[in-house]
Length: 294
Image (cartoon, rainbow, N blue to C red; front, side, top):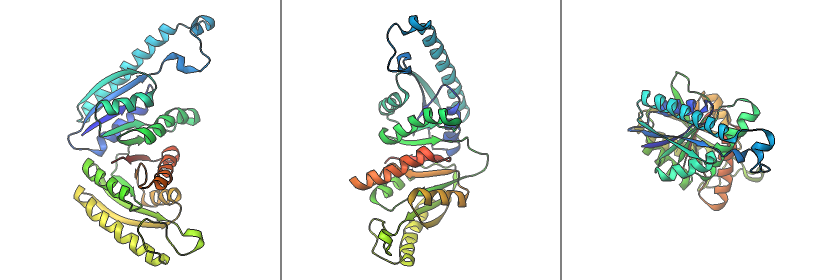
């Protein structure tokens, strides 16, 4: 299994590396990638003589950015090697989201890991924009590390709407086989349509709430059996709520520190709906996320 680790100029990448190590993917290797943005990316109005006009030494700035890039890549490789993940490094030039997407395809990665620690509104906006772009456009699954992992066990909520796409996401999770997760909560959130006792879950018969929950629980328990093959315990949780609010509730009540979701749905409309749910969770969630793209 090959992982691409996005290494920023701060220390957000440390959380991404630590989560990659703690999740314990089997036979994992990594490529640590740092992208140096062009100085002209500081603003659309920058002209070729910007440095001379404002007394800036552009060449000196570029050298400093390269030195910093090499420094953080060396540190990221050290952390990965110490964590038992053989790693190589690459220094590229361009916008981080574009370059990570390109490197993802170039290295045929199975997974991208990036840090997105909440460090004030500005930091969240900068690093969050990369994670949201990768959620929408990357080919591979994605770890968005919001915090560094605690020393305790990893408890994960696996969100499913039982669509064909969600089932493929389950297959992808089992293929990736993260041995570091000790407990799964298989979570489904459903809604009542138009105030009537009908559920908005693909493939379910129209039913009253109790019957709907029974059917969803049966499907969740079937997933629990499959997840047990990863050596972890698993339980089911069904909530009547909007997807984002429902998953937040399950995360809080279960004490989970990892949320696992699919990148999109299984029809054109559901890809927009479920994709927007995932996009919102990536933008707003305080917990680390594993976004699966089968």
